[in-house]
Image (cartoon, rainbow, N blue to C red; front, side, top):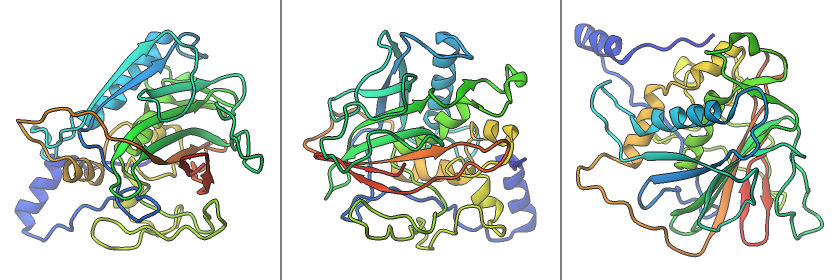
Length: 316
């Protein structure tokens, strides 16, 4: 089980011991031109297709969980009191049962229940039609290659191979193929605003077969391998880490670590005069997937860049 130190405790220790505190580390998603991704105005409305929700929750339960996941980022605070970021997530229910993925002005949150496959199908016959069945969710981010501006995001949830529940309200659901919905969506919403994993999966390749370089954090340090035994708590306790070893660790993804908060607040610092603006045009894209916990084992991320017609979906 991961443990979190409260911000109050951190402040007390720093004041009493008068020791230097290392700068919080986070990783930003970058385009193929190595430009960090970002929203011109990070007020993101996710359209949650709840026309036919899967078990184990009802539509209102899923909507509430997704709204709480968005609130974790919207209410990001470094001191536990004062909001420090302009990120605003709004999750609204729409009557669709599913929907397509693409840059169409709709940021979708979709359950895939009738096959864990792409919609629309890829036009390139060499591209895979369906996703890795071990992936819990895939977030596709469409952004301008040279500026990094995010234009559209779509989040697909694997309800074909897994069931989804609320491990806090219904701890009896902590079974082999059931996962905590709010925890996973909190992680994916981090990708929606342009944050990447704080660890690296060796062997990741792009669509053209070239290796994906090891990312660096905001302090310029290369990130460690995912699942390494010596990963420090500052890495393993982050919502943007990709490994959890128990249902309780899935629940803890709901609460942002100091590093997660620092990322949101550095990229989108709070301003009282903040005004939402529409995104620009046209796009290339990226994305990430969150893979399944095998039994109560690890949630790993398999990295691969997939070429699409005008976009690249980053990570499966």
